Length: 91
Image 1 (cartoon, rainbow, N blue to C red):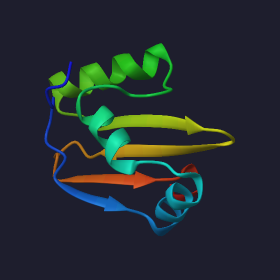
Image 2: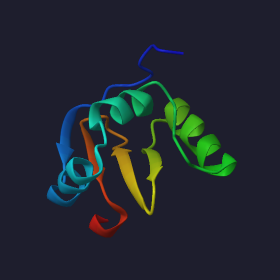
Image 3: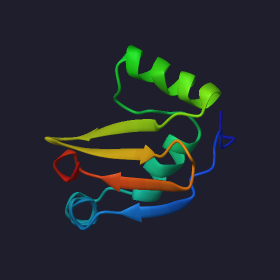
Image 4: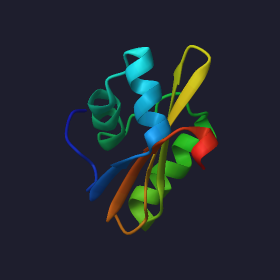
């Protein structure tokens, strides 16, 4: 499935997430694309089902990608006006 499932809106990256990505060779565009096509990364089944419900009902969509000892989160707001790439510590 490579078709975007929802709009991302304005994309923001926190400074900490940007620094972490650079330091660890993480391609933020690649994980953003995965998020946009419904790949929630390393979420458990109940969280993935919550994302499916959010697609149908218009809720927030959340993805988490594990990289070694760290994680990068992506959150698209229910309005689909903003998507933020962040670290858990930024939340």
